[in-house]
Image (cartoon, rainbow, N blue to C red; front, side):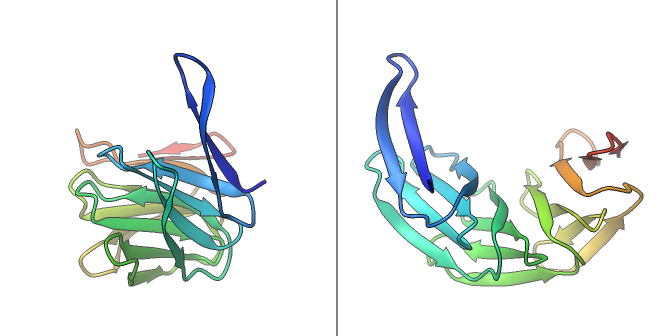
Length: 174
């Protein structure tokens, strides 16, 4: 129904419902400061909400198809979105402006992850690849292939220089 619901776990009471999307909500994140929830939808929009009040802070538009994944940079300044339009976008969370379009996948982008230092974004796609993007330049630093299926999970652990990704056929690459 395009809504997001928030429950209090101790009482199991529904404390808020966020309404505004015109399609299914495919992805959501809470900012590290716990103040905002950000949602991505099949209606091609990203919405930023005040978690406490439920008020919509911003509606971000710019993708040509539904939003599959979103992630916030570690410093909370930037939002990254992945879409069925085959792109990732980098947004300024303060202004709502699109700062960069990361273009190179040949099919819809399913998942993304931001490195802990905020310098790299990894994306997994239905084109059976993982791409690592340099946030500063917007260029693909590396392309990992060989999944044979759409990539549907991705991690960038901070302990080592690894990318961990999997696809429906259970392949894990690092």
